[in-house]
Image: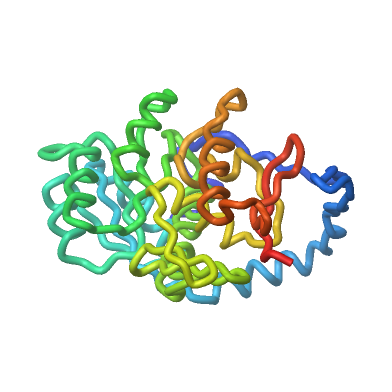
Length: 283
C-alpha cells in the first residue's frame, strides 16, 4: 500500500483555513454573529476520522491513467482509503469502461493515448453519463483548468499533487453523487425544486429557469438559511475561480427574484451587504 505522506509522487500546495468571528450587516440593519465553534480536542478529531473512514467507503472509482506506476500508486492510495478501484491504461479503454460501468467517480488523466482526456469527457457527457470526473493534469494554467471544467469536469487537480488531497477530492465527489441520488427534491417554504424533472415550483406555480438560474437556486436551497458568498455560488455553478469585479451573480439573482416574486412583496433571497445571499422561506 502507498502511504500518502511518503508517496514519491509529490503533489500541490497546502489548503488554507480561516477561523474567527465575523459580524455582517444585513439589509434590515440587524446583525448576526458567525462564530466558529471552539476547536475540538485532537483525540476527538482523530476519532471522527477513524469513524468516517469506516463509513460508506465502498464507492467505485475508475482511474484512467496511462502511466502504470502513477496509476498503481493512485489505485493503492484510493484502495487504502476504502474505495473500490478499477483502472484503464488508455483513453479508449477508459471510455468503454466509463460507459459500461457503474462508477461513483472517475479520476481522469488529461493526456492519454488514443483518446485524450477532454475528448473522452466530452463523449461521456454527450452520452448523458453524469458520473463526477476529477481531471488530473500537468497543465495547471487557469485557461487549462477552465477548459477541463467547461468540457464537463467536476474538479481539476494539477500535477504534482499530494495523495491526501487526491483522496479528499475523490471522497467529496463521491459523497456529492450519493447525496444527489438520495434526494429527489428540495423544499424550502413554498419553494419546491424537482431534481429529477429539473423544475422549480413557487407556491404551486411552475417557474421557468435557465440552466444557470436552476443551478444557483439549487445551491441556495441546499444551503437554505445559511449565508453563502458570491465566490461560493460562482465556484459551485461555474466551476472556476470567481472574478470579484464581475456582476454576473447579482444579475442572475435579480432575474430569479423577479421570477419568484414579481411584485417584490415576499422576498425569498436576501442580500447580505458586501458578502453574499441567504435563501429563507417568506415570513
